[in-house]
Each structure stands twice: as structure tokens, then as C-alpha cells.
Amino acid sequence: MEPVLSIRPLLAVAVAGLAALAVLLLNEREKIRDAVSPLAAVVMFAIVISMAPTVLAGGTIELRLFEILPGIDFAFRVDALGMVFATVSSLLWIVAAVYSIGYMRHLNEHAQTRFFACFATSLAAAVGGAFAANLFTLVIFYEVLSLVTYPLVYHHEDEAAWAGSRKYLIYLMGASKSVLLAALALTYQIAGSLDFVPGGLLAKVDASAPLLTVVYFCYLFGFAKAAVMPMHAWLPAAMVAPTPVSALLHAVAVVKMGVFCVLRVVFHVFGVDLVGRLGLGVATAYLVSFTILMASIYALTRDDLKARLAYSTVSQLSYVVLGAVLLSPVAMIGGIIHIAVHAFSKITLFFCAGSIYCASGKRNISDMAGIGRRLPWTMGAFFVASLSMIGVPPTAGFVSKWYLTLGSVEAGEMAFLVVLLASSVLNAAYFLPVSYIAFFGAEAPGGAEPVREIPLVTIPLVATAALSVLMGIFPGYFLALAEGVVR
Image 1: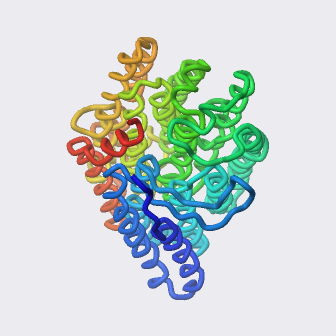
Image 2 (image 1 turned 120 degrees about the vertical axis):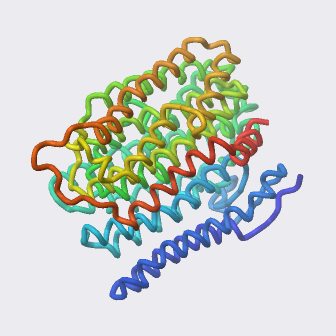
């Protein structure tokens, strides 16, 4: 099928960029300024979803803007993998925008104009990366995302915020400025192009196995947003940011950009066959399995709720990579749809953490005894999202974990089946006690201070919890896109 030429990929990016500009211009008119982000999010989602029929039919949408160097264009290409990431990002921006308004107003946060402008720009970068036609365009948006989320991480401008934001920038910019640049240069030298190619850009080049192996691991660790250990420390450090930012980092844009980039490398730079021939799939699977288990163990030891969720994210991201590198079609489908599964569930969990903080000022799990009886919607949504992260039907997490477990069997890799089962047990061990304490824990004497749900904060988290269930019951859209990537 011939690619469809369309300006819609650029429009999707431009909507968010223009929203950021409008937020800055409306600095003195707060009510109108706050309305910009939800409106822009709806428009972006409409543009993104309008391209879905073409992609689901097996087609692609392209737009080439200009040439940088021979074989390197600044260009967009909408395919099945990009649609997974773009659909998730644009849909969740709608609820995140509403949630952010409620959160920032309730706590009377400073620098709200900067916050909303950077938030919108980060979504422009995420969708731009989703629709990138080549490594050059992808890395441009990857770097923009790193830079524009930096002010979000240091938002509180206290000592902890500056320390966390420094680590954030060092890991994300330092990794990309060194090994990632080396990987791009070597790829261009070997292939004469940086375009994404079905079956792999490097699949048929004449290059030595050691050189290709070096390039592969430069990409794996250069895309540090994927948080594969030891390139994970930036993520817990970034928890100094406001909760809407944490939700953005962990569910919508930043970490998803990381694993998305790794999937691009596996599927469209190296190709499944080449990754298998070089033995890189099994090597990577062991590496990310270590990340899955160790990050879960770290999560068990954290009393701060956001820190526990942060280490959970480190673990869950590696599910996506594991599915891809098992090189089994069923496992690859599971890894791809886990992008959406984790996004819907983890944004709910962070929204709940923010709701608890807004309502009660509590951060530590040990201080949350009985809070579920006063915040039933918040903690009910937290429980539903926890079940999804564990993989309990009929939530979305069951779908991706089902495909991942079947895929490990199909690949004949029983060790990774054990990893998946053990990690689900660990998920239950660090998620379920939170709900138990909240609903059944005995409150400390004098601990019954007035605590109530905040509508603009609670409604979005209930909506995302519902999405986690709906995707578990009706996974067809994301399954169809994932199958389009694999076939």
C-alpha cells in the first residue's frame, strides 16, 4: 500500500506547541489560560485518532519536511507502533490537563504558567517522537522532551528539587550526548541512512557482528528514559516534582518515549532477524529481567508512596522491552500493548497519590491508615489500577501479561516465564498492602482531621481507572495495532 501524504502528523505536534505559546501569552488571564490545555488535548487526540483507520488498514501516513544531509530528513511517518504511543499520549493528556488544573489550584502552586507551557511542549515532543520517520527526527524530539521536562522536575525550586533535577538532566542528556550520538554516527556510517525500515535498516548491511553489538547496546543505554538498570536512577530522583509531573514522567511521555525508542531500534533499525542472529535478544532479556525483579524489590522497601510507584515504573518498563526481545510474535504483541496498559494504570496510581496529598498532606504509606474510608473514590481507583499492574482479569494488565507469558512459552524461554510470574507476586506484595492499610488500617488517635475528595482531581483518576478496565475488556484497538507491527 502506497503511503498517504498528509499534514496531519505535523498538525498534531503543532497543536500542542501552539497551546504552550497560548499559555505563555495568557499568563495574566488564569481561567482562560487553564482552559487552553484541555481544549488543545482534545484537538490533538482528534487529529491523532483520525489517522487510525489508515494505519489499521495496513497503511502509513508520511510527511517529509526538509533534508538535513544526504540520507537524513526531518520527516514524519505514522505507522502502527507510532499510533500506539501517540494514541496513549494524546488521550491521557486530556485527563492529565484537567487533573493538573485541580491539583495546581488546590495547592496554590507557583509558576503555573511555566508549568502548563512546559507540560504542553512535552506532549508535542512525545507525539513528534511517536511519528518520527527516522532516528534523526526521533532523537531531536527525544532531546526536546528531556530539556522541556527539566523545569517541571525543578518546579518547587528547593534544595531537593535542584538535586533531583540535576540527576535527571545528567542521566538523560549525558547518556544521549555520548553513547547515543555514537550509535547514530555508526548507524549512518554503516547504512548511509537513518530511516526506519520494516525488517530493520541494518538487517542486510555488511558489518561485523561485534560492531553491530556495540551499536545495539549504545542505543539500549543511550535511550536512558527506558530506565534499564543501571540507567534508572534519574527516575526515582525525579519524584521531587509535583504529582502531575510524576504522572507525566511515568505514564504518558518521558518513560514511554524511552521504551518506544528501544522498540524502534529492535523492530526498525536492527530488525527481529538480526537481533536473533546476533544473540542480542536473550542477552537483553536477562538484563531487563534483572531490572524487573530488582526494581520490584526496591519498591517493597519504600514507604513514600511516590517512591514506591517510581520503582514500580522502573520494573514495569522492562516488561515492554522483554516482550520485544523475546522475538516471539505473541511476546512482541504483549510488550507493545503493555505501553498502553502501563500508561492507563500508572497514571491512575500517581493521580491517586496526588489526590491523597492534596486532601491530607500525607506522602508515606504508613501514615495512610483509614484514609480509604474518607477518600473512597481515590482509593477505589488505586485498588483497580493496582490489580491491573498485578495482572488480574478483567483489567488491562491481564491482557499484556497473558501475551507475555504465552510468548515466553512460545519462545521456549521458561526462565523468563518464571521472571514474569515472580514479578507479579512482587507487584501484589507492594501494591495490595497500600489498599489494605487505607481501607482497613486503624487511624491514629486524633487522626480524623477533615479530608474530602477534590472533584477536579478525583474525576480524572476515576476516568483513567475505568480506562484500565475497559482496555482489559475491549483490547481490540491496541491489539490490532500491535499485530500490525509484528506482521
